[in-house]
Image (cartoon, rainbow over all chains, first blue to last red; front, top):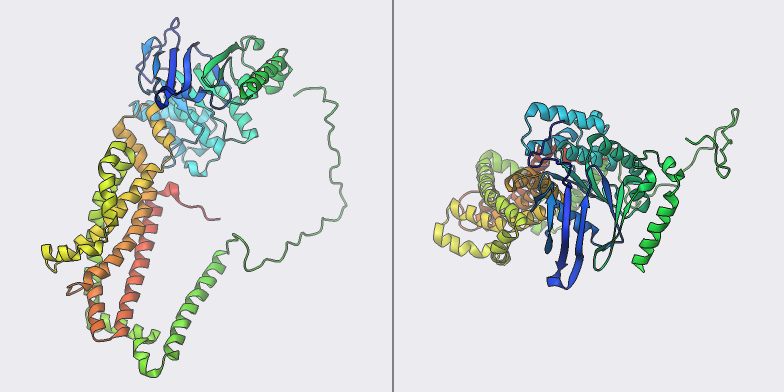
Length: 268
Length: 294
């Protein structure tokens, strides 16, 4: 598949994202949302940002997206310094951002239109991604008539169709009910695996984090720092699509217990 | 699926057996006239609307006949107002006055929208533009438009320009602040999604902000054109030769209350018509926004 966003070239030995010594101060320095945070993302990995509310995980994600700027520090995408937002970092929001004035198909096309993808290729990719998110029958439907899960699938398809290097997700399934959420998680794992993407997903749902992620970065709050960086080695380097299978794996219960303990420590 | 079923999860086997009587019909509680948030059927709604209108006209007629005969001239019946209306159109070329009034509304409202809507959108998008204009515009909003009548008469005389200018002044400042609110009310993630997709500022403005805010802006325009009609009568009362307001004012001088009321009815009907046109246009222009009827 050819790369749509042209201003980056994936290089294997350079991390897709490198955050160095990121500090974010508010109110003239009296409040530190993030305090000297550094990490690297690994290629084709799903990283979950977990932590109590107010721990700066959302601020960190928005800084990566370029929607907010750090007070100090440096951000590199494939070794290149980035300032401001760009299509190399696609974002999926908790609020439904499928545009209500465009049909599902036009929504998916929209991102590629911005990148000036030729019409023929655009159409082909649009249909392709609509199929992947199981919305081909709803191509001409406005978001108003779609359910929350379907709207979120439109947003997912729109972001994937732009072919960003990194996909950022801010509690993407937070507004969905339990069953739809579960379906979306499975769909997301499937698509990320297929499209080979580097992903950062915020969640405060510990079970969701363990299910989706290859690695969990746990933030502590006030000031926001990385409390723990946990590779999910118990999965044996693969992604488990069936939740039942995951629950039966040795190491799952222990990890979940640890994360809950860490969360309790933070909210004390 | 796991093959061995967990001991704690037992399957339910009490499926309904055959040859059993159907469950008794559920009889809902009696529906009252005043049920909280209950929407009537379309049929019932039109019956209720008819009754409401009938009550209004009934009160009107009753008021007419309860007035002492000597003063009945000042409270004409529906029939008298109807015939005054007929007389106006048939003998006094009222259609000319009506179209002059509509023309004044149309021109002034188009001008106010052409200037007010873009300014409101820009102020809603960009904090600096807002800071530049908003304090001044807020002050203007508190000035009663009618207070400009003497000034406009000095500047333009009793001309069409003076009337159109008054309607323009009466509408534009409120329209700007409504459009500003409509624009800031759009979901902020729409703009952020545009930014992360790499859209330019121009694309975000014309391709995201405008379509997102337009249905609400259109609604604001519909509300403001009603205000236009209010100022129209004020404008035409002052030194106008033609227009609905001028006809009413002249009738007042001769105590022709039936003609005054005919003018009021005409303005009401035109207002209703404008509203219907705006709503219909919104349905055609913004098909994604069509309200679903339950």
